[in-house]
Image (cartoon, rainbow, N blue to C red; front, side):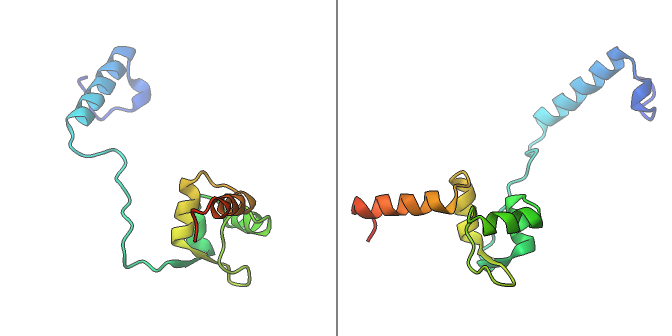
Length: 117
């Protein structure tokens, strides 16, 4: 590839293959990960509000309201403003986002089996 500043649409197939080979080679030699790990800081408060809950879950604010009203996601207070526990949301997402009824049923089964005191 003689010209490195030309637009991508002007590349030939062989130029494109050479470019992608160089990119993959550079990535394999890099010591950085493609997706940096998001570290939870201990100084963050556990109580969060709608906007942050939407960011954590990846839902829109409207979807969060809908899921809360259908009791499909954990919430601390349903009044205004909605409040959530960061820890409960993260646990909920790790469990595959079960509904509140499924989580309550799991708690009852654990209680009946004597594993919850």
